[in-house]
Image 1 (cartoon, rainbow over the protein chains, first blue to last red):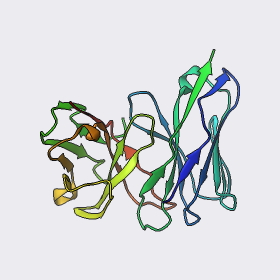
Image 2 (cartoon, helix red, strand yellow):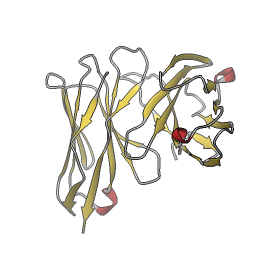
Image 3 (cartoon, one colour):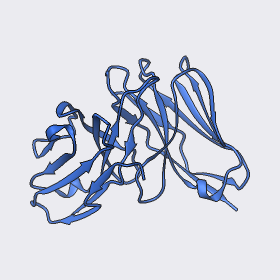
Length: 113
Length: 115
């Protein structure tokens, strides 16, 4: 069973702080990694994807990937109350030629003013 | 709005009834996925279509579930003889393989409640 594990939450940070979300995965063949944001009652919204080891920055978001450690993280700088949501880590199964995603259980982030 | 639409957005049904959900993907996307999400969990893969061909079905899809994608455009997911355990959010996602990889965009989901 291929697994994706996220750090247990909920995570609470003050406005303006850095929120750090972590994810580990079991499938060494995985090559593509994604972070989705999901507001309560809504569907997942893609915020970042990363394919190569290292860091990838997009605005206030930075995704970090370490394939050797099977670890992917998401940093949110200058956190805002509107960032309060569940963050889902997802990985494409290494054994498929298409985009079958395995998701973690999600980390609830609360940014308080 | 990602461009993926789903209908209906909410469905309440009684146990034993049949329900059908529809997904309209982004028009140029040839890949379509169905996922199911229960409260407090991440989405779980149900099935995958490339154009009109259904290439994988999860073991989560019992015989009561069937999905189609005629002509490689919209897709339907039917659940026969619904059970209370089928209550969940049913999500559709579409994607297209592009240089660098594949990214999936989700529709708004159909929330099913089986009484």
